[in-house]
Length: 395
Image (cartoon, rainbow, N blue to C red):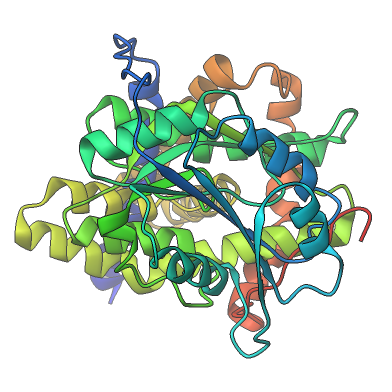
């Protein structure tokens, strides 16, 4: 019985060390300097931009203006006003977009809205479809870069997707911004510099028409972006990260809105790990497909707060078994994982996030980790399964 317990502990520690190892490799690779290869953008393919919007009247004008500045003759901008109860459609129309009003309370979620937009474009398909959320600001030159890279590679392309805390935000929001940088900048950049794919992030995504017209977009999955990326990878078209294109949005300031947003993202991610992580890894190994293997390993890295919480709990458990049974190997494994995670986080902070949080703030982030514990417990007790938009400050 004791031997069985020992073996089980070792297996758990090895499995828990795997996402830490992936994160550390990504953080190290992100530090690597590479020669920037610029794509010629004097000529680029025709583009259609789809903006899914659910009650986004307060933000959508700025988003449309930023997109229109980058469009060329023949390009299209389509806003899907999805189940809106405000004047999103009117505001978008006045801002210069083509507006599609969709009303279907049985099929809610961004995936259904995107599918509606793609079906509309099928009457006159563009070369490239780009998807931008209605609350995002698109940095100059992003559309050209996304479109040219997608056309050249015939693969989906993901822009750098940053979410920022507003000025004078509290520590929790700044730590959340740091965690976002790790997830959406450091990790995909590291894999990109190793020639590996990234996850799709929901906004700032570009697709060749031949790929997106057949994609299974119409679903209410909380992590519809990750699911779409996996679908593309299984078709030998794993997404490419393009850090030279960038979309920026802001965390909602209200506590309830922030809680809803975090719950949707993190419950969706955890569900994807449980239901798709291991099967995707096995499929990649059987096919000898390093892109699928990389996608599976990357997907199985949970949010930084959850990974920290799990690593700490396992370290404490391994310490207890050492004092009870004098088992050194579990303690060594747990210690290596904790040190590896700490090193990866410090590397990410030093190169990419010193402007967001100070080192003292980072060292005090354990309170943030335990503050999120109810969110993770809720996954097992009352998991969110339906897409719900987080309310904005002015809603």
